[in-house]
Length: 194
Image (cartoon, rainbow, N blue to C red; front, side, top):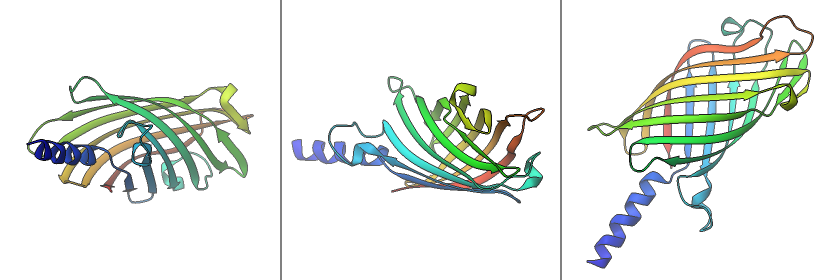
């Protein structure tokens, strides 16, 4: 009996504690990202709570209002499920870099993430993210940063999901009038867990 319980517990933990890789595309943009579950690297961090990741966006000028280059980001996220409710709440920090109109752009935004998983035959998760960096967290030619995203994810297999999302990334620069939108687009993608 104890052996069966241990096997079930281990299987449950390994389902939820996973690294992930993601690819998002639309007609013009490509986004690649990965997150590593730090709980899988040792016993000091609880699985499925702390993540370190990176992201790269090859954005197109058709989904922007400025002259853009590739966008690189590293991120750190801590999250928890709210008492087996299907609601996940997270706080995070990012560092990002790009060039806009030949000027370097670097910020360190802070953010909140919220997700809700419907417990249906095929799990569906709705998520939203909001990250902001005021002038005090902006460097080089950057003035501020604002990113918000909405997405819906459908787990079609145990370790693979389809997702549909919308992102808006605003990159304000010094000595520029108005908000510089790096990318504003709807995307479709795949998320793989391993």
